Image 1: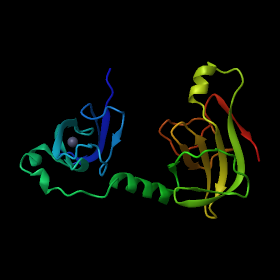
Image 2: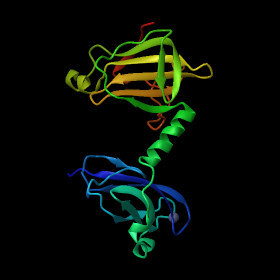
Image 3: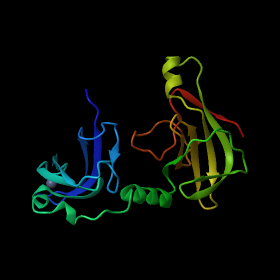
Image 4: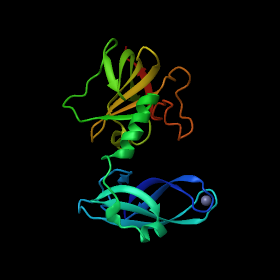
Length: 226
Ligand SMILES: [Zn+2]
């Protein structure tokens, strides 16, 4: 089974006018399991072309013929394939680098919820009560400090070691709202995730798509450090 990359975008169904998000898997690029959003540079070849595909409307099930405009290697727009056939790709201008990613990040900063990233640091250390931590454009005061520790005698240790990362979980406040921030030391960098403050109200896994609800990994316990 080959790998694929995925174009993410929004499109209005030509048949029922429903606005939907498409996730078009493609093997035409690096096959690195990357996600391409509007504004991303996807093609180092600096080329100009339309990437055409068919996509079923999730509402009315009609097949839409969609074209993604690639201008100087950048994903710059989404139009119907019929429109693409009469459009010169050179009429498209380049747009803000990472346009959709930047909008998504702005939205997370507004809601003060979601994923943030830091570049890799030499040492990953516990922060303490009274320290500040920055995430999603806000500065947060640490009120309590926890860590997720692997429960004794659960499952296959090699698998757990592979998926477990050193982590700290902080209960924080920015003066207005209270949040949980989990900082974990992944191979690729420091992953920072801001959640609703739900510790004490049950930290069990809810719906898988409830990403803003903090839950302890199921092979771990949450240990209070400070
Ligand atoms: Zn439709």
